[in-house]
Image (cartoon, rainbow, N blue to C red; front, side):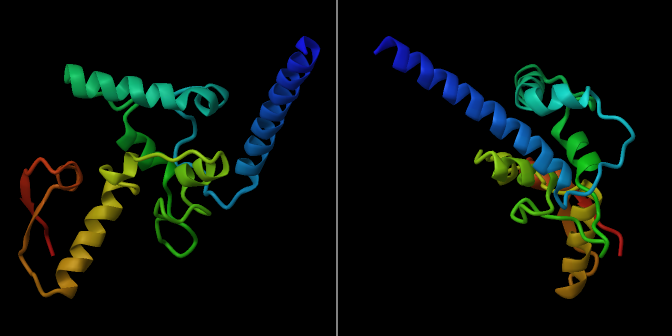
Length: 162
């Protein structure tokens, strides 16, 4: 019985290693556009395995301690990793084929809720979308919340230029 249990754990570990290697190779071959920056804030290998802890650590520093930095902020990650496709469009999280975060989370069968509150595109893309929306609805000179505030629902208002 003990030998069978040990064999089972070895098989599980090998399966996890194989899925990780396949996932990394698959992510590298996917349709996900390359990031804008030349180098990530951390080593690529480190970020692939520790980004979740990094994001949670940054969240705790920001929410609990009021410390806001760009280095590990979700906004900074989105601004760099979510890039325009050949049509000039930004992928949305719901489009798992092209969205940087969604492609890996979908492959790993990991459900996240970050984008229930936070933007899944760079701030400039959200601002442009709001401007197009206001023009389509004939709300010229409309007053909207700053994009970050709109997403976080804290209520600072700004006027968008036409």
